Image 1 (tube, rainbow, N blue to C red):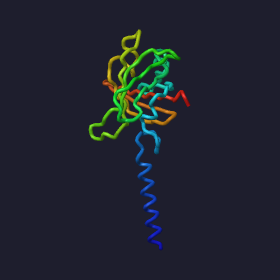
Image 2: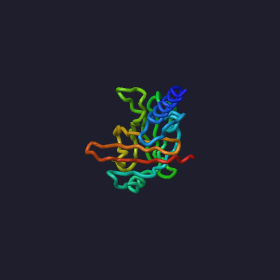
Image 3: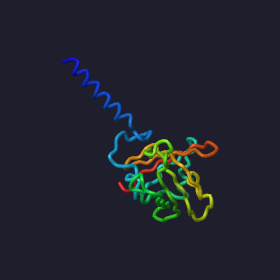
Image 4: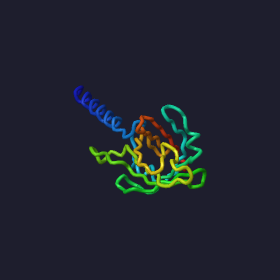
Length: 168
């Protein structure tokens, strides 16, 4: 009898460690029943904060735009889709986005590629969203309410962008 209960406890512990160890993103969630594409798809995200090397540059980014919308890509296997940037309710730029494939694991959707195509006015737009560059962002957190991404540029500046779902 004692052996059977020890075996059951061991099996339960193994299952729990497996479930909690399978988090796709650094900052959660641990378990999700929606795909990453469905969480991002047709959602308007407000830019809550933008940090560059632990310095807050949110005001600089908000001077260009303060919200972003990801169109299409209802699942991870879709092709490149649209991206819109807003300042208030006005569209101020657009581009493309897709989940970046990992050459070692095709089912790893922890990276997001964005490419800003048009941004009237300032030709460089606003880093970490520059004009005419493909940038890969690592997704640290993706829930229905939060999207946290980070990017390290070629001179090792680290950008951390936190979005909040505007439609919830």
